[in-house]
Length: 281
Image 1: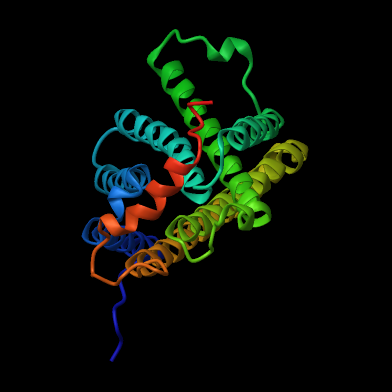
Image 2: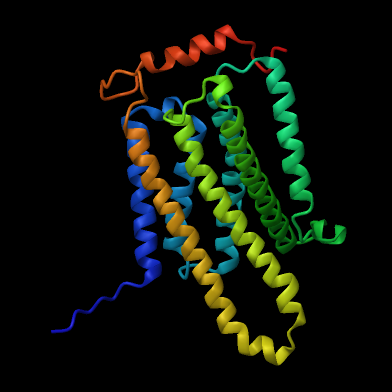
């Protein structure tokens, strides 16, 4: 008797990723973590929607029209990623005063911006002119890609700040903000490593190939890209499960009442009221 296992690796990974994100949304809503992390919840919702739309519409509508749906969604997801960085930073350093924010925030942004500047390739100025729907779509894709890289660099930088200075500002690793940050850093590092590897492949190896060598290696290159994509999705599944477990459990010192209540907000409110807001200084 032979079992007919008709599911591909792509279908299995997509199903696991979609299911993990749905469960995460249920936990965020059911445990009322969405009240504490609204931008993080919005980013997970948009990521889940993007996953569903891409799977349902790929092959069922023209590629150009599909890109006009997926690329703007990716741009919005990248912008949400920046807001998630700000949200997690504020909750990771509840005791930080205005002067600390005025020093750390611009410095982190400057370092991430400089890293992004050297993270090419960058298009020529003529390629940034919008004179057709295709050029506009290319510009939107470029914008989303760079903002996504910037958000990843900021997340890694924020993780380093929490690692080295978290204890000075009463940042515990069992807090939900820290547990979310661990997952975000894992995703960001994986994505940056994949981009760095692909950049090295496209800038140093492919240009030195002859046309015949490239044609022979094209299938192998596509297989590498598929494995990198699958690896990135596996990391996303593991991180989503990490968030499900971490956000289901209450933070230390909070009564396990089944839901996050106003008692969970009191430490945050008292810390903010005792310190200066970054916008007030």
